[in-house]
Image (cartoon, rainbow, N blue to C red; front, side):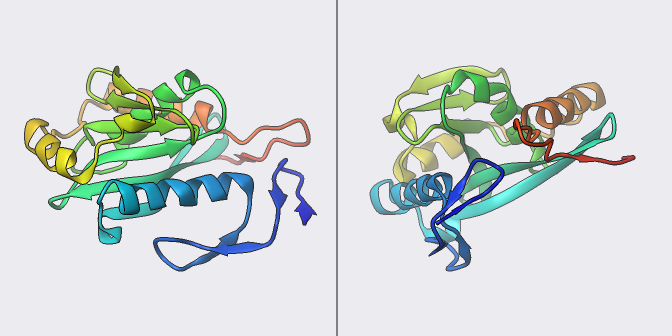
Length: 189
């Protein structure tokens, strides 16, 4: 067991459930793996419908930040929702999840986002930023997702001012800062 400066204990390595990739075995990564298993084994998604570990890079005020989207769910070829994980309060994760869903796909705003701490979850509508449902069971199963895909508009997030605002939200909310060091990169962007 290795204690790292980022406050994560690394127990060794584990194999990613979706890709087979070898990853550091941390408490957070174990929960991410459980979420992938939940989506496949209980909620009926195919592994090919899940995109793990996509990122969005931002740079404001000389601070580079990489935002991780734990899972992105595709239904009938379209990204229907993202899943963002973080320990603790879900409310503090809503704005960044909505911003990420609005920005991740260059062709359209992903209509839904899920924020979860591994025990609880919220389903968010990204266009208006509304909480649609709460509880871990609010994550749509594959059958419900197929119906939802027909209900939502996959419109481009084109307003430059709102796009910049969403990028700034990600940059601020997803900075890796701890008591040891600021882990975001300070560069000229």
